[in-house]
Image 1 (cartoon, rainbow over the protein chains, first blue to last red):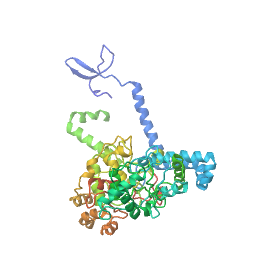
Image 2 (image 1 turned 45 degrees about the vertical axis):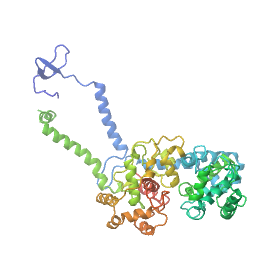
Image 3 (image 1 turned 180 degrees about the horizontal axis):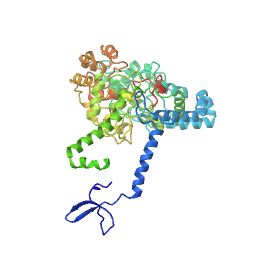
Image 4 (image 1 turned 135 degrees about the vertical axis):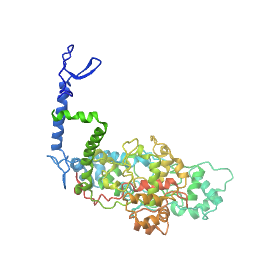
Length: 293
Length: 244
């Protein structure tokens, strides 16, 4: 089986190994055989490959393909794994889904489960906007404080999570800060009312600003949503303007921008993406972050 | 001379060797590729996947241009941890109109196959302008110029024509109305929105950006991101019909 077996067999005297018969200026090429361990590994892997083709889906046929002895498929495997996961979680998930929020709060085991599940779901879904710890950022509410735009009761949070805020869901939380620029209020009026709003929470206002005039503009344009006392309204999602919590920022330029262009951040309707149990767990988790009014 | 010694013919004639190599590789390729074209069981039955609208397609072009695929995959693998994190594993049919597909192979950032409707448009605007503004630990570069650059989609109909040659079912009407549809989708109150939805079911028409009357590259990109992974309704999708 050597390359040149038809040529005369020649054995190298020095090594005792046969040569290929090729000769260059008296130097002959040794025909050293492959190491046995290497050859056996090669033969072994060929046998392994044949076994593999029998056990797993492999060979295409005319209208189908060989399915393998166990009928394994990648999608079947993940479906089975997820089913296992679901059945392992089922007792607690079902209990959670059936329980009222009051019951969950009374049962330490269920509360711990809801918090753990909620925390995992929060990291996957909510942290992008509200921050890994729920601290929020500009335009995305801080969930760690006990200040709520749409209500901090568990039912309120669940409602917000399921249907979203200004989302495509017909039951979404609706209502947004209207545009007061573009002819509704003059720039001088917007400046006045912005100074008035800053004064509500004790922020510095330039000397000589007519706060009374700003207050009048506020009463005529803003009080309908933010309230006569400017403490906001959970039904409309209008923020309390008298505290030190600002969604977009408390500097005058930001407030003027908000009055000018309006505001209306969107939260997705998670009911579309997450199951009801996960949303319930998220509501519990989010409330434990900041307490709930 | 046994058959085993015939290889001298291949070793001594380069043209015969070349032909031999071609034949062997062709057999391997044909056996692996051909069955995918005729085996019914490798073709998924799903409803809802439609070609991208002109605006989404323009956004996709920007996605490709900026090389988003080098750090973001669009392929949720059929593994438990991936499904738990991102949602239902990706189906081949979800990228059947993508030429080239954007599956990617590297995840410096998260998978984007189901990023649609996960964040608000406002979040995407802030995130593209400066990722650190919303995700403090992010290592993604800022793409702040996208919101400052007006979208140049004058030739989007030609993109669609080329895609239709590759088998994407863009009709002549879709191609003819491309710029109208693009305008309709990028506004809150355009009269053409109804026609757009007729041509592209469930297309979301709204002002993706903040500047009125101007469609920026960021708007198109956001429109594309917001549709990713949302076309199939997995509440009615039959998993068992497509197990393999």
